Length: 407
Length: 141
Image (tube, rainbow over all chains, first blue to last red; front, top):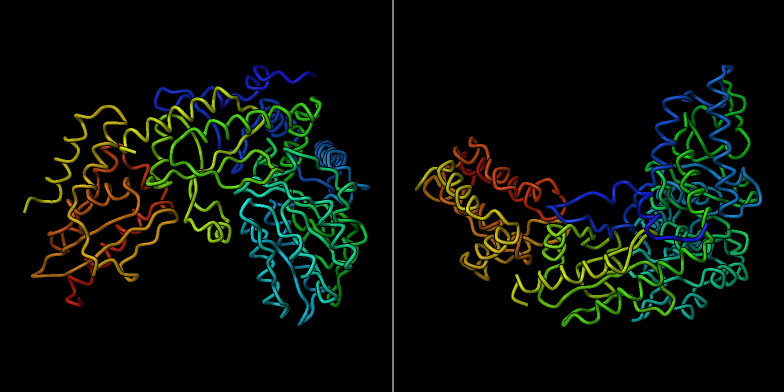
């Protein structure tokens, strides 16, 4: 289907909301995206017609629910081009996906004196789990810095990679700068050094290329709620050889094969990593969200979002005293800024009263804020349904705030 | 010293003359700017009440059975909210601070700043004031 912005906007019922009598301008898609009607309907439909526990019932509903759940896994597999559907593990969130790998990989492969590398532009969710793992395993935690434009220092990374390095974790897109990291190149560098790689795709899978085999990622994590699907569902992709080699993360139902008083053997992939009754409806909603995106040529979505992003940068740059953070030439979806003399909380609050939803603060990236020398920023983050008219509304609202605050 | 409830009623009345959001915030910011500045000696690490996004300083004293407070913030809106809290609480007895319900935030529509509790440290500030009132009443400070 051709990408038609008016049609897209009409697919998301929440966009009709009014705040203080003004139309909602939702620019907090980096935090969570809104849901199209088809996703909302799929969730209601599941609980209305199909609800049952899965993988174990002999009854009709259990079979229906199991099939829907497992079909959803295939939809995710196809979207990220995984080689096998059992390489797609359902988790609670990107955060849980990262924690799973940090825990299980650490236990299996990281010894005292080994090294783990992350970057200074990671979300805390792809930073703290590795730091915790390094503390547990007695490994060294190393951080790749970024330059003043917001690009990773690949020269420094090249020097960091060595025979002691076990795993490298980095985000494909930075949630606070919008930088698109050269994932393919970074993964190749790591693999040449014999290092496994986890890609945090929470801010990329909905905006840019998302082919795990083309990237050659060993692990790839993202969240359903940031790609127009429900909250509480995350994905961990792992290459079969890695997932087979890792010990389970949590014990319980579903993940077992034979349990005796002396020993337990584990289920095959993906169930080995899915202990307990899973979030059954989450993957179903996620699959419908992916199908929603699949109706378009993905390049058209990207073109639209880039168009709005570049227009946003242009308009923001007109505002005196405004600094944009994140100036990589490879960028997507994020407009992060501050205005001299205006606290980000004040700007965010006064934009909210005008119906403009942005996020303010450190965006769960305190190391990034430290590197930028600020204690927070205002962040407008774009989604498929945002328009240039909404950018205009934000700019007008910013001018109003400046006037109110005498700036 | 007027009672906490009387001061709260005055605040609610003042805000009732300001139906538009921009007037309310302009007034709030003005209140913050008019608040007597916090002495440099009190802008200490110890006096920081941490919010996720803004920094608030809160100086506490217990004198002659009254709780005396001074405050400041790097955010103008939070500073305005702090000014309202100072107005209501500073100079009151610890018993009154602990007993009287804080109702003016809700009645002025400013309660959204309380609900986003991690964001601005306002909730933390109220908790700190009440904790200090307990100590003041017990003669521990």
